[in-house]
Amino acid sequence: MPPKPSTARAAPKDQRSAKPQSSSPTKNAYLLAYNALSAALWAGVLYQTVTIGSHEVSNARKAGVIYGGGGDVLTAMQRGLASGKVYDGLEGYTRIVQSLAGLEVAHSVIGIVRAPLLTTLMQVASRFLLVHLIASPWAFPASTRHNPAYATMLLAWSVTEVIRYSYFVFSLSGMGVSKLWTWLRYNTFLVLYPLGIASESWLVYSAIPLAKQRNESFALALWTILAVYVPGSYILFSHMLAQRRKISRASKRS
Image (cartoon, rainbow, N blue to C red; front, side):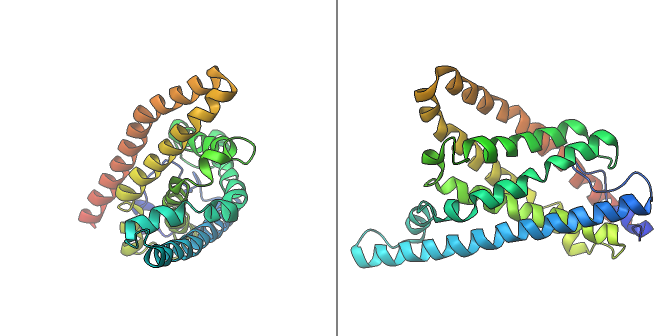
């Protein structure tokens, strides 16, 4: 079923929008299935990140109280998220789930969705860098496994993607998107995007010493990537702010 007219007007062109260019039932069914599957998979990442992370933080806090190592929340969070359990439990699964997003570049190229290719490619490429290189077990697990930034990165990614993909499911199914979900879609990124970018940047930075041991050029490449993160992040964040303004204006007119 195609989206309701009111929903179609309310949903602006997203950087990786699931809105089809036509009302083709085949396209709509495919995009609905793709977004529903993606939402479910990222919900799995979110659940495991919160479950494992909270368990490790709780254990770290108890250990701090018992052994006098500091039982405050911030210290417990740092130690708990650095236990390596989040990485052990989610690295492979997250790599597979994020790899599925490569289809979104293809969606933009062949015109299934009205998504700007540049911003789509930038986001997918930065995620691929993290899951297929920086955090992969055959590259720099030593700098990632016990890094709290890995857990905070997964938290930022998974919350963002569950909201985003669910938003498109509601729209494409014809159910309509509630005001609450629209608010979440276009406001939570104000916190989650900086958290995600900071976590990604720290993981890349942490991998540089190990990269230097292998090859000076490899380390230089990672420094270059970090330098690109600044303007790249600005472009993506500005794009999302523009979408937020469109939604705000549309809400005021309705």
